[in-house]
Length: 316
Image 1 (cartoon, helix red, strand yellow):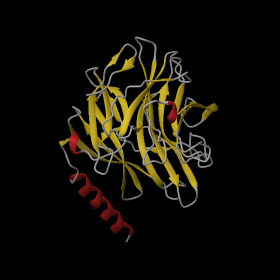
Image 2: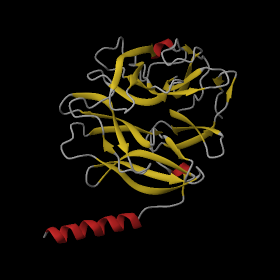
Image 3: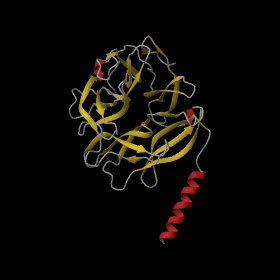
Image 4: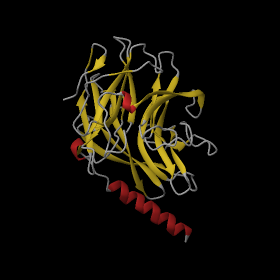
């Protein structure tokens, strides 16, 4: 029976691989929170999204040569049996760091009261995994536990030290007046632990453009830092409502992740899209990816990005 089951599983996987779609236009990639990873040696782009599948699969990948047409690449992470946080698996951000690929992803266990936090996965075999958990079960997260944290991203400072920027949700137990917050935390070199204490950077309401969503909360999503070498500024893109889902910008003129951060009045993208990141394509051009519209059926959106006078210009 065991042999028959293994043969059936092998047959299922073979059929699954054969059924993978190819040449899918970007406009038809259904996803939220898209994060593009660039492999310059292979000349490929990768997109890993949250998707459930067989054998506790949680993350699914696409690959592309040109950012316009994508091939399905299959599931790249299967949650271990008995893992404490089976819920959410939101916003997988994938980074190449010190010769390996790491994925920051938001998880939770609603039934057992484990609030959201960001865990870290690692692949020793390239951007398509398989990814494995590297945070011990007694800690689970690189974000502070019990604070309702999400959307952690990785930033490497000028001295080569790794940091994470993350949100504390508007409904977290420690926030005031249902206003979300953005924090930072220094990480160790292995990205499986923290160094020092977390630091609050600002509240969503500090930004002049952010508004309440549905009349009840000021949402904070997706902080992403990009260093502008020309001006020395550190630029942070993040998302909230204004009143549509939008992308805004804060600037640290000191170049430090700890700020101080000054908010731009003009939004980068005000038209119902967000959860953005920035990358350079294979030709060195600056690009921004995000999902739009911010509703059921949102798709991958990629725009040209421009930095001028030490800040991002609105995308068109």
